Length: 397
Image (cartoon, rainbow, N blue to C red; front, side):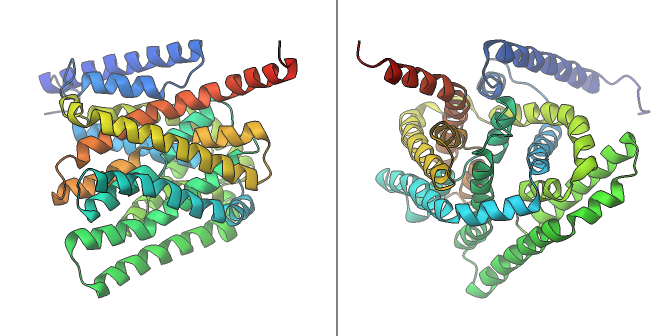
């Protein structure tokens, strides 16, 4: 059919997509008016419109999935623009002990919950991965929405996110090998390739990023945005090919861009980031069948509450080690509470292998709960701390 010709299926898709974008816009305005992040509202709307919800949208999965992936990449690219390579390297070095504490303290609850529920050790280990890693996409959106990009604790938060993503470089191949029952030689090769790929990309961003900035600096706005988006997608695609998070690739591209090019990129990419980020959060909850959540809701919420406190503590501790003040420490912990895209990927591996029937629904309910708790905790942490400080200053009445 010629481009632009009438097609009932396309017409229906365009209409539904248009209505959906208008709804997301209204939600964003409402969230801004009451002073909270729109993320929890995007997630709840997706749950209502997905399978088992009030209305089942017919938007093709391929379209929504690609849009959601671009949203995550742009979120991490914009975060990378805020920091130089030297700042990133110094932050990771200083936060490595806190990153190890983060791994132990936040993987253990999921592991123990899985064993308590009678799951196999491998299924419990997958659940531990679900509770361990914060959502880079949600955290990036929260930091941007609340204007925390310039705060002293933000480099520490980013360092923890990078350490977690790097930990996934080892975790995912190992889990893949255990699920597929591969031999040790193939497992070691897969792991080595992933680690080398991250090391090469990180070295390139830190040492040669200024060459990339210089190469695109003379472009007009149209060619600059096309070039940058192309670089982001190519790097993310190559990273995914070697079993490394595409989000890490986008973050490293942001680190590599500096100077006048970075300033221009912020203004051009910001609207695209907000559009595709909204699609990401909506698509995530659209994939959740609301009817499957009921049997696992109580253990999922219990686990979410427990691990919200463990993540709050590890963020606080990481910021304390970095010399951040009291308020910044609590902000760091609150920012890290939400889990998201990686947790769903980890659960998806187990679901595909058929090792535990309840793993997918458990992970979905857990991630949805923490993705609501996290932005709300981040929004209200400053007012709550300010109120406590006033009570202390006034003393007993």
